[in-house]
Length: 294
Image 1 (spheres, rainbow, N blue to C red):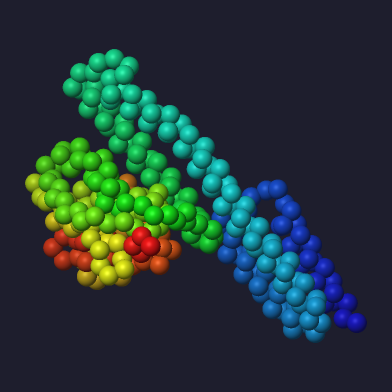
Image 2: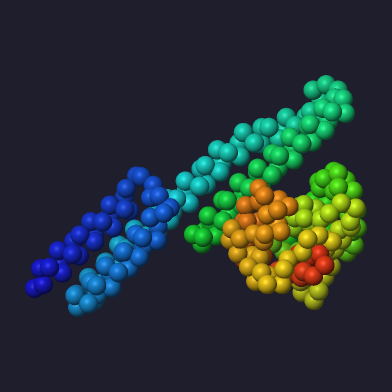
């Protein structure tokens, strides 16, 4: 009997069980190190131990430990995101009441300030959603709640939301919206539509036009936003949907960007078995194709 192999097996089992039941969170910087270490140890043990049952037992323990590491941290991100969203929702609701003058009449300057509050809160909410979705995508736990919905109505609603910001830059939004019913997660698709319209406004110069389209292409419900903005250099087009990556010209226009919006949007569309639309020459076209309503 190989007592050294059994001893090492006991150590790995103890480490695995410790990680599975440990109450503390594992810092993100140790994810890859722990995962790689466990895989190396498992490989070594498979060379030392010929008993298949023991090998499988060790593999199960190692897998559970690694799963616990990632699940714990996803849970932490989810809780933190919820705690951040709650006060932001309160701030947003009060801003809506102020804008509607339900709490008293406002002068022009106060109305402008209220609009800025809403804009800032909406940005914060979107950033939190992007961070949470990114964490779930990385862990493979992002799920969709699919149902039939009116894509055209969704787009109209999002356009109305962004009209005040387009007006500030004297950007004209031209709509060509055919009736389109889609099948998918309405909230997630709304986030994608919002991200694409917001980017088009943010990265377009003043006194330009943005074209927004919905249409049906075969069995696909389609949405596109075309702008006359800064565009994407052909040398970096393949990186545009990478996590955290941002083009240099985009950083100059909008330094506070996270580099997560396009990454999350692409993953959401892929989870719908859809396709991202992206072209860039003089300006850019961003959009998607997802299944039509069945």
